[in-house]
Amino acid sequence: MDKRHEELVEKLKDSEFKKGYENACGEYKVGIIPNIFGWILVFAGNTVYGKKPSYEKFKAVEVIARIPYQSWEWISYMFLTAMYGNEQKAINLTHTSRFGRVAQDNETMHVVVMTQICKREGLGGPFRHYLIPLLFSFFYYIVSAVLYTVHRKSALELNYLFESHAYEQYSEFIEECGDELKKRHIESEFLKFYGRECKNEYELFCSIRDDELIHRNESIRRISVPRA
Ligand SMILES: [Fe+2]
Ligand SMILES: [Fe+2]
Image (cartoon, rainbow, N blue to C red; front, side, top):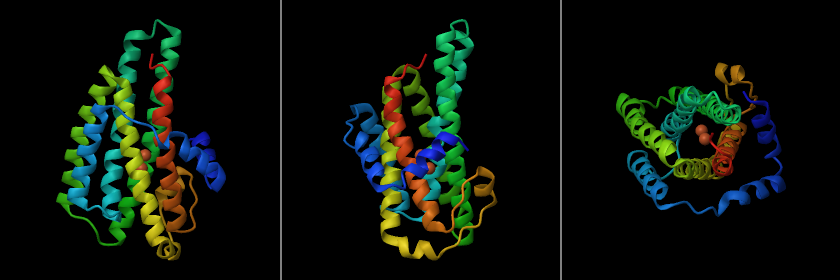
């Protein structure tokens, strides 16, 4: 758990603050390459799991969501091996790997908790739940790693699109199923281990939705921060 991230999640409970934060990057226009890959990811996800948000779809989204952060952390360590002689570059690269680490841990919490919910609901099959997300992840890892190495802005913009999609899907789910979610208690050892407290699924889904909003905005903010 990252203290600064959790403080921002708390602040986003204030609707006025959230509106400003949401608008800060809401109209951002991405380049053609991230647009193409973003479209492929969303189209493939909608084709396999349906357009409507569901527990099953969220589980697949969360398996894939960790991937870019994982690849960026690996790449920044790789660059650090070549550039540790330059202190400023080493600081910038350490910031990148820290950002990748924090976001990965956050997405890991999402996928672990979502998997427990799917188990409880009796949802799960080796093909739709394991093999397909794994194939998506493999494709996404290659694309994220190559883009981050050769054109970092495109990699961050692609993540912006993916996180925007996740944010919209969680928002739609909460809008449609909010009353039901308030009645569902959440019990997860991993959630406690991570350090987040949620009384019910409504609180959990609202906090995950806001995690995705933070990831979305942070992807754009990092475009102006030098990699090394
Ligand atoms: Fe997530
Ligand atoms: Fe995310």
